[in-house]
Amino acid sequence: MQADNTNDVKVSDTALENARKAHDTVITATNQMAKNMLDCAQKTVVINEAKKNAPPPVYDPVSAITETVNFYITATGSITPTWKLVRVTAPISGTFISGIRKDTNTLILTMGRPQSGAGGIEASTAMNNQILYSILSQSGITVRP
Image 1 (spheres, rainbow, N blue to C red):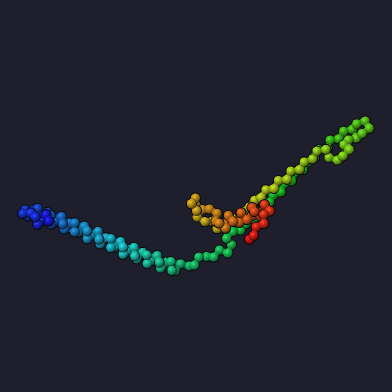
Image 2 (cartoon, rainbow, N blue to C red):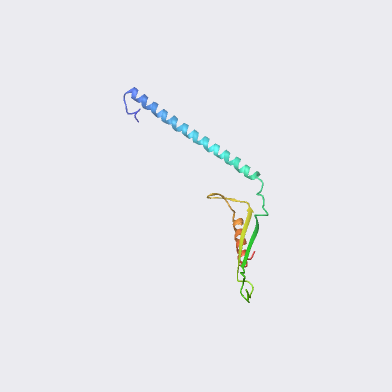
């Protein structure tokens, strides 16, 4: 409109030149966008072809292996003092004081395929279930497999 509404030739030429520059900028941006869309479509085809040729996932027949080791430590002791009186020898009975202590410690080793989690690599659900099963079986609760 500036080119048509003026009587000055320089103003009209400047306005036309600005309109051509704007036109060229729009055409360049449109061509670049079309090129990017074509590149994206070609990359999508390549990715889909790679998915078709990928081997099937490997079946893992053993998801977790667990070994439970129990340590039983038993310590016993007794005190039997003896003394002798004039005509009586003591103790008449067996042990005077005795004690026993039994400690049981359990070590549960679980090996399996870890999984990715929020905090990095962590134990899989199968590994956690194996540990829980071992703990419950140690407690005497009947667990159905």
